[in-house]
Structure formats: C-alpha cells, structure tokens
Figure 1 (tube, helix red, strand yellow):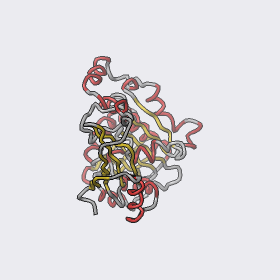
Figure 2 (figure 1 turned 180 degrees about the vertical axis):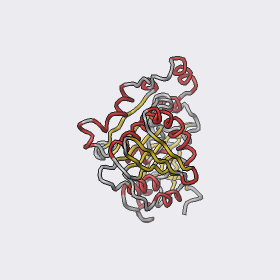
Figure 3 (figure 1 turned 135 degrees about the vertical axis):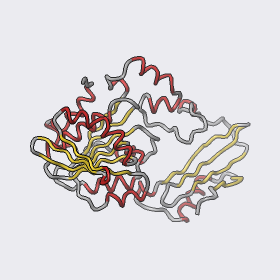
Figure 4 (figure 1 turned 30 degrees about the vertical axis):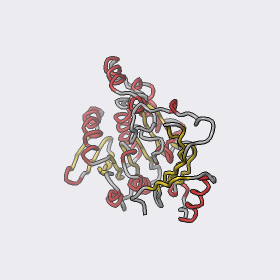
Length: 314
C-alpha cells in the first residue's frame, strides 16, 4: 500500500518528538482525498500502542455510518497487520487485541441534540469523530469532555461546510491556540485516485460546490439560490442617494441575530450595512432593548420604509 507525504504525516504524527504538544488532530479537505482511512488506521495504531484495557469512542453521523466508513475498510488492513478483532454488533462494541494488549472501542452516532446523552458518563482515552462537521455541537463537546484519561487525544475528520460553521470557527481557525495539528487534504494527497477519476470529479461540480468538494475549501454553498455565486460578484453601491431603504431582521436569542440595511438604486438592491451577533460565540446574550438600539444604529437616521422580520421569531 502506497501513501502520500500528507497521509504519512497522519499515520506517524503521534510518534514524532513534538507529539506531546498536540492535543488533537484535524484532517479536512476534498472528497476522496484519503484522509478518513489514514486517520482511522493511525487512530487504532496509536490507541493499541499507547494504552491497555482502556475505552475509546468511534463517532459518526450514525452507528451504521461508522461501520461503513471506518470499520469495513479498516478491519481487513488491521487483521493483515496482526490485530485480532471481535465485534459485538448488538452492543456497538469492537474489541482489539495485539501484542498482549486489549482495548475496547464503542460506536456512537451523533445524529441530533439528543445524541449527547448517549455518550454521557463514559470515561475515554481517546475519540475519533468522522465527519465531525455533520454532528451537533453538543454531541462533539460532550465527546471531548469524556476524554479524561491521561494522554488522551481527539481525532477529527470532515469535509468542509460553510465558513460560518461552528466547527470551522471554533476548531479549524483556532487550531493554534487549541494545540491542534491541522492537516488539509486535496485529491492529489490520495495516490489511490487515478488521473482519470480526479478529472471526472473536477468536471462534476461548479462554483461553490467545486471549491468545497474538489478544492476542499470552507465556502458557503448551503442555502445559495445561485450555486455559482462568489465574492467576485460583490461590489460597492452606486453614487447618490438610494430610492428607498429597508431593514431585514433575523432575530435570535440563542441562535445568532442578523440585520441587514438594504438600499435600492434603479432596479437593484444592495445590502449596504449589517449587524450580526452570535451569543454562543460571544458568551453573552443581548437583551431586546440592546437589539432595538442596534437596529436604530443600523438605520442611521435614514427614512426606513419597512423592517422585515422573520415571522417565526419570538
């Protein structure tokens, strides 16, 4: 089996002299870039090489996806390397043995907010979270809190989502301060893909989906009316006064509050200014009075014709 330099880095980082500095590893990037297989293989080798009679978590969107994405491709390779595996499907449990050591791996699904209760209470020496960006934040954070054994580490893999996604903002962008080894993958990092297959993927997607799935960039795609929209289309409004002004308001208490100032020049509308506040990220909720002051400041004395609010808001 042949590995690229990036894949080799994933497989061996925990053996390097600076391994003690890293508290976690994140592998993100393009689809079919080979990150999941290498991360999983490295995770099992690390767990069996460093621990004895400990518990670990294998997490995915569902228990079925953990088996499909991790165990099905990895178990044959592990057995070739001398590992003995015993899986209890009814208990979502995998027991591995090698070199006189034995450890237990439990499978968990992070489908929704209620999933956090499933993993609560267990003591872990490590956890692998496959497709972490698809799991609820509460489940990911509860999993992290369970890793309390000395020497425990967190292992994440994911395909990119929106740049506003909490995992990107709290883990990827803060990798340095969290002591995270961050490795970004492209299709070129997977030597198992032929040039023909790579070219097929390049011609399969356009716009933001090409940037996300092929280039592996964290870019907004979900919710776009036009999937070819990009930052190059952003421009300044024309000179002179707008014909009319509106303010849009998506109000949230726990969720973010977003307000936009819209002006019309001719037949085109421009989002001229905006207000955005995420109480979760800031660690403090604003009052209704504070949001009203922010809306007034956004209006800036302009003759606002209407404020259009999300009717589902409180």
